Length: 458
Ligand code: ARG
Image (cartoon, rainbow, N blue to C red; front, side):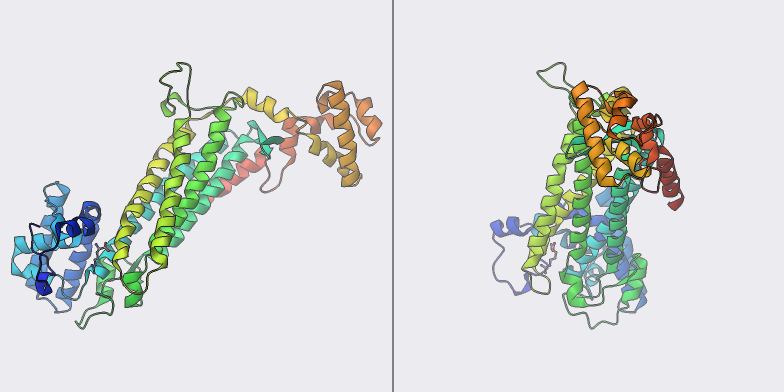
């Protein structure tokens, strides 16, 4: 209530304090201040170049804005909720500092195109930061895959041990998921990086502006082509949250695997102490809380996507105040994505595979039975018949309480006379893994080839 509203002219009553509290956004949108000032500097510069402002007026405004940016950076700016939002706070301060000329900054502009521009600048930075963090994770996974290309690990389907694989291959599967996420963010950036300024409230402006000058000053690839659309849609923000939700679904799945693999029942990997926490009652516990929290945080990012979709679905063109509600879920999504990547990447980089346990788990449950069937097929037995033969071999091994590789040759030959003593090579887990030697397969050779391709792509 300390300041007159810039829009007070047609009002006869002061704003009810409850309304002031209800409508203000400066408590959270002050985060947009650097982008707001950048946008205003470019806008004033353009107005100066187009003769809407004199060169002197433009440069006074620009240096005033730069001083405000410094004050905000130094924490010396007093935000006033009576001035509603970040835009009116900065504009009012400008006029206090540079005098009457400050009142000209809002020429040919509205808060509607202003806030849409601020958000797009914010999102562009967020996408770039997210992309850099994803690149670091991708490199970490490639390094890990290289280190563990020859490490035998159990591959699962239905959560049952299915076939032995290379642990490096599993890490490359994660890396594929992350790579697609990075591509999605990069693609969203193209649509985000367009400039709304010039749309003004909704219809454009009668002043002789040049939107291309402003767009170039702000590093936009182009201008939003339609003024109504420019101020009303937040699909670029929804796209970020959509890409972020998919990313968090991926991280959550990876974390679920880490939680399982570190459990005593699996005992397949060890996470570094620095990335685990203990129990306040059970002294022996070492818990994978970081992985669980990342899994948990996926919920809020998915929730924010939902919030933004529902926020948008009922809105007629053009700008509506509903859109003020986009900021908190959006900021929270960006912060959550970056926070998750900041801990997930170093945690994964430092994981240790318990190779003896992984090898034993990979061999359990007749994991090379398919290899025996493939062996028979390569000797002319139709696959369906081979499947039946191997089924009978598995039954023999189950009865004898041993693994397929422990059955005497005579037992195997009793089921099929094409079996010779070279069969034992395919019944080992190492042989099974090495045999899947084609692009996309788990053979360590192929893991190394995939790493080389990935590294030459970037
Ligand atoms: N605080 C508003 C928002 O976040 C800025 C735009 C306000 N425009 C208006 N016509 N009231 O969307």
